[in-house]
Image (cartoon, rainbow, N blue to C red):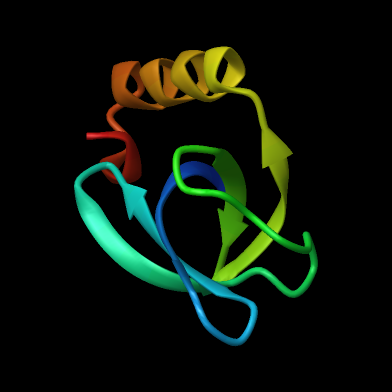
Length: 75
């Protein structure tokens, strides 16, 4: 089963890309599907693509739930 996870934007890059933090791991993702992004906002990420936006409270709750279930991306 595949999961999309919340990731915090840490750097906006050129060419519709951003660097995000996924539980301490930094990864470059495409933002072509969500448009312009800003550092600090949360995106829902799956296989290198931002699929949508998520507010910080929902992102924190989702990451806590994933951590409670032992999912690596949330740790």
